[in-house]
Image (cartoon, rainbow, N blue to C red; front, side):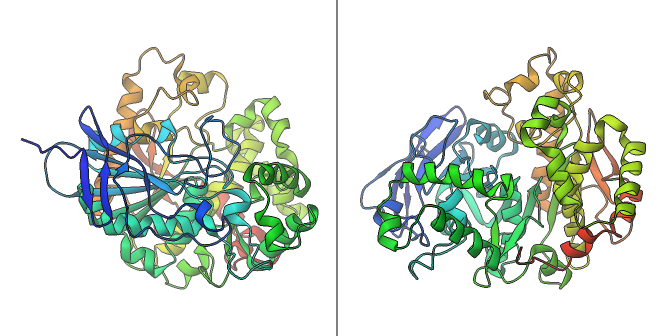
Length: 496
């Protein structure tokens, strides 16, 4: 008979969760001290004890943001959620998941990331976390006070990982078998985190879903952005900054983002020579990541939603693509345009070009750099529901998340399945994805070919069936090797 684990005794104190079907949920568990007890612009402080029993039956507050979730934000946001199967008493593999959201919004509390289905179907422990966002998490105001730090969103994640390593065995998780995983901005964070020996000592392997290992910035650029924020609102002292309510600061942040006109690149991880001394690709090329298996992938058409012209105009994609190729010769751009039109047709040139520039290429280059020193596999999620096919959007950014977590009813993803009268194929694709993830977590291997240093780059392709195919056309990879983007990506960050 399985014992009741509603109340768990940890080295820090008691945590009271809730049994739900065949899963125990422990929600809103604090891993760091409240930001209201210190500065929201300084490093987090790991919690060392719980003076009273922690009520972990409901999700905690969100970190400061303009939230579509319509949930409370507060300084008590540095919390995590644990989903642990009820059956059995053995310690289970742990999935430590970092959410995306362009480092400006999102939360581990979102219904899309509810870990119950995944934990139950694969018999693993799932952990989701919150970390600071926007100006609180990714600007650096240390010019005002030496106690202020940059990369605070990353520091929060490191703090959560340490808490999990120290305490997850109390929740039936194996602290010696933790898999680091992130999607979008969370995957970019994973690419940076795995360069740290301390992270690799706490985890066994990592999974990157639709991240950009090149989407990091220099310390100089972060300083410029941070000073631009302070100057825009005439903030000159520590006291002045701390006197502003977080809601007022979010109003400022909105104006700042508009003025900077950098879109999703406004907030990035900084190569600060403190936490990080090198970019992910540089570190991989130098052999800084060894014997640490990785699984890296994207969707087939990350920016496929740009097929809808109103959305394309909304994000000003033509300007973004133009800026992404501004260092390339006219001859190169002409060759690129011709090849994309040949491979994808005229209608898909822009979304596929943007998909490759932001997601696929950097992921492939990172994988190839890694494979010289550690095993790495790639995947591509191609499966399209009827709704995606009808709108010619294909498998775009984040459409793979419901299949990973087994959650198909959250409001944000429900439109994807409105016309899918027969969900059996959807469930089957989800089964492929989840079983491959589980296999990687327990065996540190995938049952398809590893990435090598030569083309083609083979990957698992999730269609109506799971097959093996090319991650990207080899002619595109060969052409991009002649680009400035390729050479800059392998040299690291520049000040601007």
